[in-house]
Image (cartoon, rainbow, N blue to C red; front, side, top):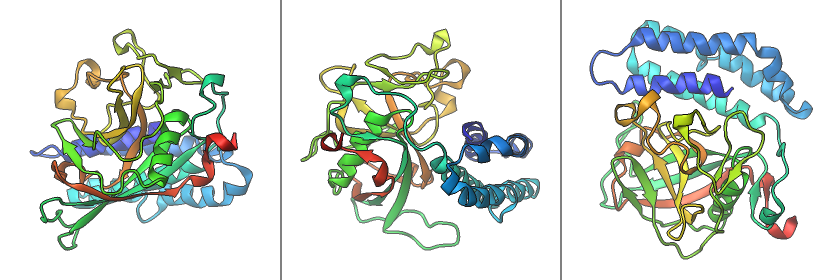
Length: 318
């Protein structure tokens, strides 16, 4: 499912090319995703818990042949209609994310004993942000819609690969720590306030290397030597924790950022120069079009954990 997701996410970058759109490359990406989905149908459905197989099968069928599925996306690309492609792509990615949320609940590894007193997320969840313009202006309308005073961003947080980071973030959201927080923008990121009324935990830098079965703690990856994370930073809308002000071996207890990855500013192999240096714990699945519209001074009106609270384990429950 991650390979399907990555193949589709590449289309998001291709759609932002201001000149002639490379529809041929987009078609290749969708065909690749479609082939994997069809060839690996049995293993995808086998990865679902028994009580979720029926729901997963329905989502799988929707991903292949549904109104917002891969076949329909392929037709939109053949019609060379970028607006339809954008809408269809968002729909397909949403379905992929839903299937991923159903897969393999719980953690497949034991946390180090010294970290058992941290909140942890034993699976995936969804956080929904409502963003408001700080200067009273509006966000661009959704397709065929009206100008919006507020906009919605949804993020999948991944406790499978970053259980401590995702758990700390989910607890902060539940505690209302980000409600009313101002946002700050750079060319590469949208950051939350550097100071909050409610602090989280001093979580160690947490990165799951590709091919490994458990995260590394307080250790960065050397991508030049071929070390790559399971949750890459080099994705537009990746969500990560900033570094602690005290030590880069730890993440900030509260400050997170949306990463505005741009291949044009990337290094060798198309990877961000900061790849493997931050605790990435999630990805934007709804509202990627909102991120470039956010300006310094805009506000998180509310942040809610809309799915996954049953997977959040707090220290006093351990």
